[in-house]
Image (tube, rainbow, N blue to C red; front, side, top):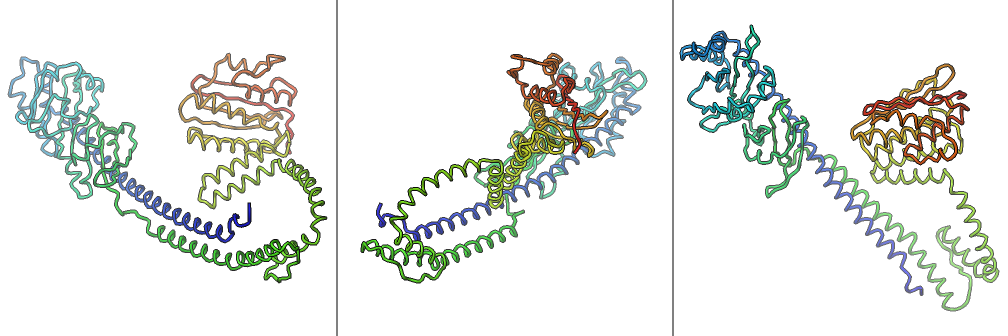
Length: 579
């Protein structure tokens, strides 16, 4: 390809600078938007969690208070007389006496809308016989009674009495039901229903900040608040955790949060818009300042490169091209302003003076150079090259703000540094444990918090030498064949102690465990073709075999396990020297 078809250095530099400026602007712009979005979401999440927890505590406390009132009601003498009386002796006077007794208690209690007491013979007393419609068939059904009777006197929360008592005006009520047992005989005498007006919960929301909240039952029953917010109810909050979700509509982006009110079957929802609150103006200003500073620095160095590098190089290039066009290899007599360019001139002049000798020498040198490069490359494929590469990539990740990537590479480098251990086959227990820590740190990057590692390594055991890589296969076996198969978070505990001159190391996991047959298969001594390691626990068996060879005895391992609970592998290393 001719010189005219070559790319221009100045043009390449200019394009690179423009590309760099565009990348800087794009990176800072994206960073600003991401930071703003993140901070606004975290602010709204924090605000929602504070509001929801406050309301949850208020609702729970309110229900507990009404539950205590319901306990007081069922001990009223007139109500107890009504419940104990024979059916033939119950008349309107007795029912009214019981009703007045209940009303006397309710007079000092706000929000209790109605109390209904149903005897086992279905004779009913109600403090409000006008505002409600009562369904005696539902009250007498086994399905309706089952949850109440199974609670054995404890309060059960319903909504509108699960259809047994419904207000005629359609207003929702929360019903506290409980089985009534006679104090003397402990026999069931009836069932009490205490309806709590939804106004109690509406008053809790009677502030401007709470106009975007809805209180609902788990069954979808609207209780109080903003009905439009209730349309977003599609969350399972039975575990008590607060759920957050971002939705978008024609009015913008919203954060919908939901939680359970204590242990009650009640859900609290909050729908809040993403506003400007929580916007990190200070961080944005710092980022803008850094962006402007970096752009100015890029433009300054671009001009510096043009004046100090590309222009002198172009001038020098024209002189060499003039020699080429004339066909005469004459010396260049110019005096370049910089030492590096002067070195380039001297090199070109030497090339002209010794061109023929250099061509011959170049052939030999090229051959020798290739051979030397191959030898150097072979020598470079050693552990320190891997360490240096990982450190370089780690610093690049750190400069780019990828702290997690930097930490992962640093952990990986530490793992291989201890893993290779300069070819040594024996290492201190402290370094062996460090290998396991790095290994588990790398696994956590993949599997998250499914693994919790605990260490109990006394200082007096750290310097004992052990065969290298005896713990990592055990830990790997615990993760892949124990904890992962159990499908829940597990613990791996590594401990050590010295007894009777022998080093004991235990690796315990809370995984699926193993059967006695499996333990016997792992601990028995194998020989010949029987030791081909075809089973899935070959790494564990191979480790046991290595320790047996190291200690010169077969009695080096104890395995304890309980299916579904745990597995503990104890290694007993004799002849372990303390450094």
